[in-house]
Image 1 (cartoon, one colour):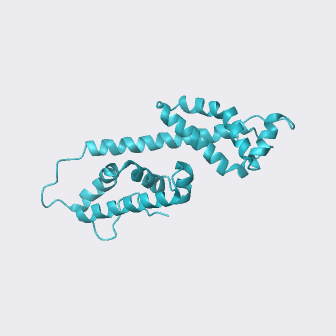
Image 2: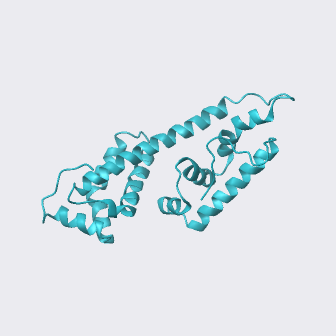
Length: 200
């Protein structure tokens, strides 16, 4: 945990203890007081302002959900938030890299394979990159969070602000679309492309 130790009895110390105790007003105060610092951290690394704002929001969501792990005796609240912020920025960079790889893969796809080409080889190359790229934005995002970031449905709902039922619906429809694609491309029953392990 990072940050300078706080002196007992300071306003920052009081805010930190209220935050950890689950005081929603403390969450608002923490955002008002430290949101700019987290945003500055994000914008110093992420080129896209929208990505930086998303990383900032994700930082405070993660901090609030994990507030019981914060120990005011070990460091400052702002230091703890910046530590989470750094991880969220890294997550966003990895997500952007994945999206770029999908785009690059789709761009490099060859012309339709001639008859006789092993369909499993085609499926391996196309299913994840091509089919994820074809899904509606929300379905693709939910599947990426579930499979690549290994988040549960409830965690996805909390992080994105999308109702739990809608998250499950997006994932179910996305999986159904992928399954149809595998069948059309000749994938063996029950086959899954690399990286897809299931949803929770």
